[in-house]
Image (cartoon, rainbow, N blue to C red; front, side, top):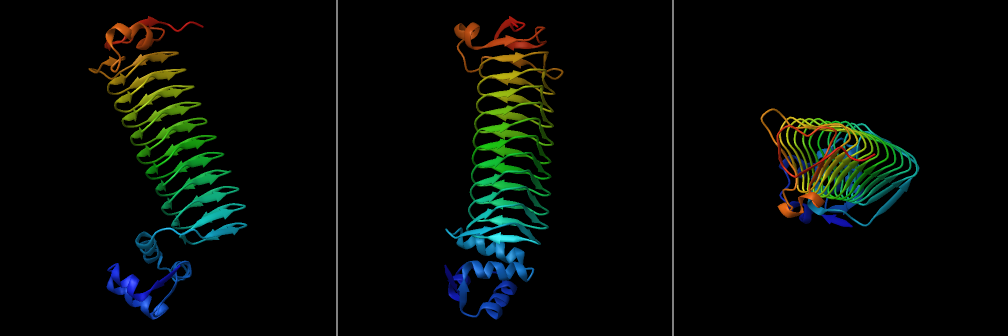
Length: 290
């Protein structure tokens, strides 16, 4: 793909950036070669701007490993080994890595991110498609996934977490802000969220589910341990906990919000060793049978 000087000018670049572009490339040149040269010259912000303006390409680059100060690539990257980037990691389409991925700056992948090892993002992590990680994810900033999310091990998020599809975490999920899933959320271990946790479908954990504010699910909520929130607990269908169900002081526990009252016994059951305080709706079923 060739970008001309007039194409770039039409996007209204900043004066300093356009002057540098003209000095470096004259009347234009190959799109990806420009991105590579901008990154090499330390103009990573200009390279990201150019990618935002002209979008991804179908170019495929296959390499053994990546170790760099920054990466801005418009197409798809396939890496047989690992990826270690000190700054920004920006890929227009997909990134596939046979080992781990670490980035010291923002990670922005236009389509899928598939990693056999672990992902460590020391800033934010934005994925335009599916996120599939064989090991764990450690994200210091906001995590946004526009497809499905799946990890084999733990997931830790230092900011808000938003998933447009289903989310499955193999072990523990820990989020220091709120979590919102447009479909369902499941974890093999504990789910610990410091703010509100919402899922449009169900929430399930092999361990406990704890929310620092409200806990809401359009379907049911099920935990092997405790279901606890500092605010209200709201479920469209049933609630089931192996230990206790506890809402915050002054808040209620609501089950069957999307079920007719006549169907509560079948589809809005509330099950735990003790009846929750503040149970406002749903059919109390007592402890789950062994």
